[in-house]
Length: 406
Image (cartoon, rainbow, N blue to C red; front, top):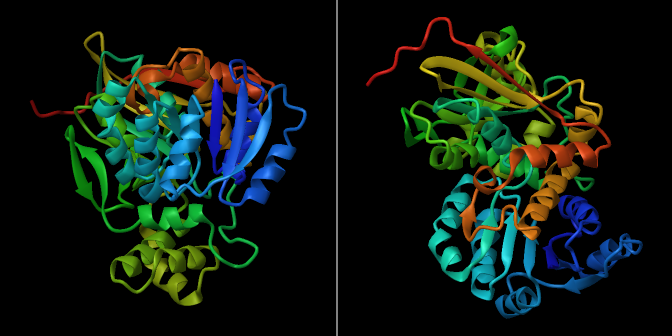
């Protein structure tokens, strides 16, 4: 297939194309970016790739130019954010040009908008996979592995680390002092209202709510809700009859400072950019305001840093299932998550490989867990880092089942 990579001069796009350029089924790779010189440099770094790699200066807000580029491609990888601006627009253009599509969208609002394009994609014979990164992406596929252990899903949680050990925290500021796009996104998803699943229904709720978890292996701790696509898509795919949310595994002081920023964001005293800057460089005034919350907040305890945790029924008995990254994995969890660009970009390329060879090529707009073969994905992820499968799935029956309303 001829592959067009939008925004691939950026860090996450570059990680994706470095992997994609060496995959079977890729006949040609075009690296497109608004900065043509950056695209040319990115293409130059792949001069030894086994397929032709070229560069294209492309502003995706130029709709005729975007559609012309898509027409010449069989599949597009979209790593251009923010997705609330560019996700639905690029997907719509891909559907109109008959171009298969994958992205790393981690905003829940455009995820809903793109899923609503499913009938159009089906009619056009286009396969689109949205949110094929780390979280969402790896997280969704961990949830799929856990769900395979159950007959019925009650609750479904995905979780990612912030400042706990082995989380690989980033400073959040660029060299020029401006906050990173990821930090600004984080502030947006930790303020206002988010959508999660309560009693089997999608409902708006306040972020940073505590969720206390008991997991297989005697693990126990508290994590906190944040806006993300996972509960939106798991509600459709796994159909939990209880609760579902995306969680941060975070220490009490960071949680407390985030909550102080959330309150000021909601009061209009900060912008997302200003809050992201303050998170990277905390001020004494807000630290002081955060102290009471930090002293009362519960911590992560023995929760693993990155996981999917489900409860449900199997053979008439309630079970807890935990799917998580194996801390003893030969490839190294630290190596994977020490660089969030590769932790996001490489899964995008691995998802693309399943679309190219037909494994996941089903017309429509899909979250990863509905079309990507999870077991194969994790085998491929392990291979990409020179080790075996990075995943452990643990299950245990619940001694005292949770009372549930009929």
